[in-house]
Amino acid sequence: MTKGKGTGKTSREVLKPVDDRKVGKRKAASKPEKSAPKTTKKDKKAKKDPNKPKRPPSAFFVFLEDFRKTFKAENPNVKAVSAVGKAGGEKWKSLTKAEKAPYEAKAAKRKVEYEKLMNAYNNKPSSADDEDEESDKSKSEVNNEDEASGEVV
Image (cartoon, rainbow, N blue to C red; front, side, top):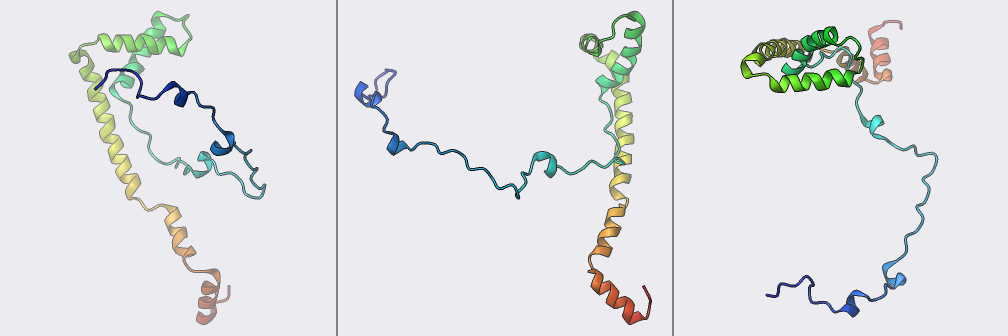
């Protein structure tokens, strides 16, 4: 084996002019018809349920809740959110495991509460399911059943 950079091609093969007819030129993209609207990621995304419980904060964010209060008291002239976040991050990194323990315990407690709420949220029947059951039958079938039973709509 040789230890050169090249693969053994001669300079003529490498420097050959490219024939446009063989490679093909790019054609301008044809414009889509106006009747077909574009689908975007926003259209495909399902809408969020406002009743869904929020995720619990991590131990760091539980720590930040307390840290913000002390930081604002010590530095009332600092208004930037980023400054509070950076100072909080530095402080969190310097804490020992023993100092982080109470925040981790609070975060774990909030996580357990969140899991209970999520179980209740996932197990309760939503009102959308009730509407689907009614919409399974077409309106004409429902009307025919009403007429057969003698009810007036």
